[in-house]
Length: 424
Image 1 (spheres, rainbow, N blue to C red):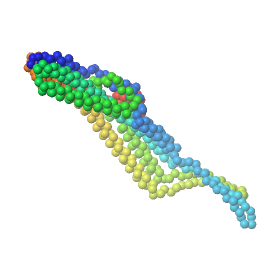
Image 2: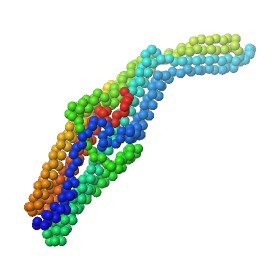
Image 3: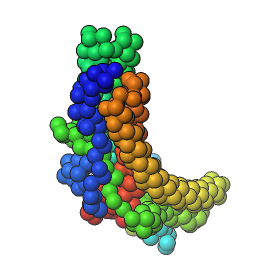
């Protein structure tokens, strides 16, 4: 039995020394964290996102519509007629008349049209900024999915290396009749389990990379894949970022501008109950020029029954916009509080997972000592190795989760990947 454990010690110990999880490095509060893609690449990827470009086009559309509202539909209209009149016992006369009319907006309407257009532009600009923000959240989520999947590959490959060495040692012991076939089967089981985990992790990594490339084709994925790490942030900083989300939300500003726009349109609809008049001039020539004249023409439409329901509709839409604003404010409050809780939980889970890895390493060290004395069998060794591998996987998942949560909090607070000058 002593020979058996001595062989295992020689074979397995070099690989077991490689299973230590990397310690958390010192991080800086900076967008260019080592585990994140370069800022220039992120900016290019976000700017080329179809959702961001769509929002940019909607800003142009809002500017155009604001110009339409400012100018108004009131254009000059001209009407005219030409008549050839024949009078009995007289002669034939050429007669014509021309009328030119120009409607104009009653006082207060033009200023409301301009205000509504301005609010529409403001809403569109903030929706553009929010579209970029949402694209940044998606990029962050997909990026950490990829990093976490790659780390699962690394852990699985490391486990395979350990199990291959153990299996080789067991095979040698079986040859010298110092181990049973059952021991070899157990070692093979652990090796194949590690290989299945590697296949699963490799598939997840390939899928995550494919998702990133499809969503952000301009973003080059590095060949040396970094390890996800949460930045070092104090509880005060985390709480401050939560407050920043509430104080600097493009969604809220867009909803506010939209509500202001609908209120301006409601007031505009109220004024529209009084129809806009038209004023112009008329010139005519009758009886071959024997009778000519010019004059002023005025047209005053009488409001129909549709104008009152139009006011009711506009008031209802303004009320709906107010409720949409209230909903958005609650959603942003929920997002801010959830981000803070997730970040705090991520740090707590990571600390617990790191303690578990430390305990698993300590247990493995004790088993190695017992193995030197011949008091530990193969099943205990394999079980301890499996526990260490599971602890490493949990620690890696906790680290990626914490990094993802803190990155989301920073993005929502516009402290990460935010443009230098955001639209108000």
